[in-house]
Amino acid sequence: MTAPFPDGDLIEVRQASFRYGDALALDRVSFTARAGELVGLVGPNGAGKSTLVRLVAGLAAPHEGSVRLAGLDPSRAARREVARVCALVPQEPPVHWPFTVREAVMMGRAPRQNFFAAAGPLDRGAVEGALQACELLHLADRRLDALSGGERRRVFFARALAQEPRVLLLDEATAFLDLAHQVAAMRMAEVAARAGLCVVAVLHDLNLAAASCDRLVVLSRGRVVAEGAPREVLTEARVEAVWGLPVWRGENGATGDPVVLPRGPTSPGASS
Ligand SMILES: Nc1ncnc2c1ncn2[C@@H]1O[C@H](COP(=O)(O)OP(=O)(O)OP(=O)(O)O)[C@@H](O)[C@H]1O
Image 1 (cartoon, protein in one colour):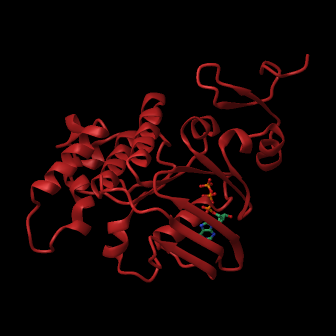
Image 2 (cartoon, protein in one colour; image 1 turned 180 degrees about the vertical axis):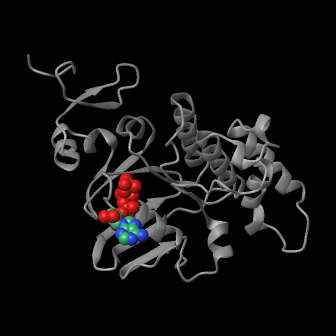
Image 3 (cartoon, protein in one colour; image 1 turned 120 degrees about the vertical axis):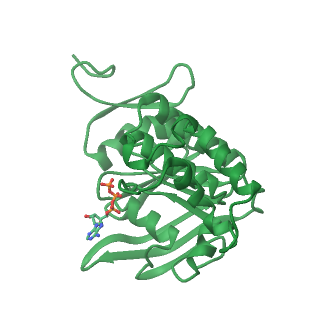
């Protein structure tokens, strides 16, 4: 991991709006995130989470407002410069790459390598460390198209770690992972944040988000409708209003983290 970035917001989105054609996907969104924190972006399908992540990564530019990534305008800066700051684990990693796992993870080193030089010991060390952290050493020589969906997702997580970014963007990086690997992925995200990275994770599992994130930002219909500590944000009233589903909100007896479950005939808070 790189040394912690000095104090300040590594991500600064100010009043950003974005449209696909005439359809407004983000409506004057302001969003900041600092070095050392793990921020969960949550909200229903179509709320604008991936679009916001794309703006932060510089894959699109806002139609109004501004985005700054470690002081850069990410949509205008050279891709190599952006990639030295920010790594993105995409929602849908490519399937048909004719590379082995180790080769794919080594690609994360490209922004740090001299164009004409072979990989050096620093590159190899970062790749082996990322493979180990993501429990991929035993698959390192397997081709990507011969992996399961969850294994492939871990490869892209490892590639992002090997990049040694200051900002790590995880767009549903836990989708398709089994329970143990979901928890492991969020632990890695927490470790990265504690090491000084700014980590933003798009998550659908509110309980996983509550258990791992320092702060949650709730998007609904292209707007930020709440942000704060998970226990402040995940109230029954808010979850019901944003997700349109009656829920029971309790507490994990072991950790004290909030727990949200759909309210049904057998859920703990259901009236008989
Ligand atoms: N390429 C596109 N062209 C047109 N509309 C799009 C495109 N991508 C996204 N949208 C629309 O923009 C809105 C926000 O989409 P976005 O993917 O950012 O939401 P999301 O919160 O990430 O959703 P999900 O949880 O389903 O992944 C949605 O209404 C979606 O239909």
